[in-house]
Length: 208
Image (cartoon, rainbow, N blue to C red; front, side):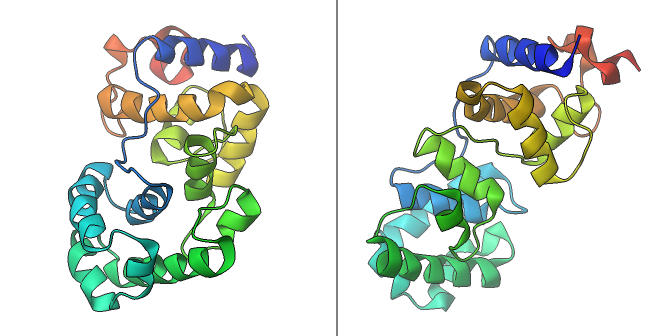
């Protein structure tokens, strides 16, 4: 079975089991952008504990742009790397106000121009906010697609490009969300539970 067929099988199988939902909780578009920034080297669960307090304290972009960095740092400290992340949130808020009229932009180039925003975050925004085809090559996506033999690289950008070639555009964003749930449930980084995996039949790693 070629990679495109195996990818289609994985898409259809996971669609029956897991939701196509982002595990980061946000209401406004900039909240998802900021939550994604906080999630770097931090669990989504921890971010979801921090953001309600953060967005209550700073409910608008203007509040973030005018905030004292130390106040932001104090709230987001549990997310780690809080000095850098706090600075990025403040600068990003200012950039959104000054250059994009207070709205999160909808192109990769514009998103990457924002402080602290990389391709993973940009793809999440493009997929979830703007409903565009997008591959979020996070740790779950990279690990699982390599195990399934769909990708042969640990580099996020290479994984993104490889998946774009074999996963239908309309399925890309949802597939990546489902991989997160699948990775937490069964295809874990350590001790994957291949004995109960719905994809084990066609998985090279499971056969090993």
